[in-house]
Length: 224
Image (cartoon, rainbow, N blue to C red):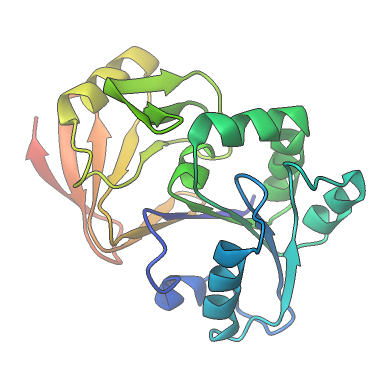
């Protein structure tokens, strides 16, 4: 199995985290935007940040308007796949229609690393937690009963901005899943059974809420 890096926002790319998953200069890094980027502004921002960390080979893989079926081979030949943020339902629609959900599961099973940013990170779970659709905010959080399924936890980014602890606890009970709720300036590395955090994140298990400590896999219980 591979590794997962869950980013609540991009910041500087979290070099301290990336060093744990990109340990060689020959890393092949593939970037998947949530929708076609005309001008590739966000791609270039990500590329520039990771170039500073020593990564040299990058590939832009479009699953939207510039999709090319032959690009699927680029994913399977990558070491790291970066799934960009955006609109969760739109990302999911593109992933399903291009069968990239199946492709990414295969990539992960073969030992690949997936970095998900915000909505891109949320879709790595079996179920996707969403707060809005096409820019229209829901009155309360919703669940899309679909995800790539490589993350055994549900993931909720930007918890400090979109705080809804009661709703997340309800999801834990209803779907029998543990949720990682990450604050804005945090990154989470999932490596087999380990959870390594940079910044602040919560682990929510039904009515038990714990703080994941920075860089150590232990929790401080908040409520029971």
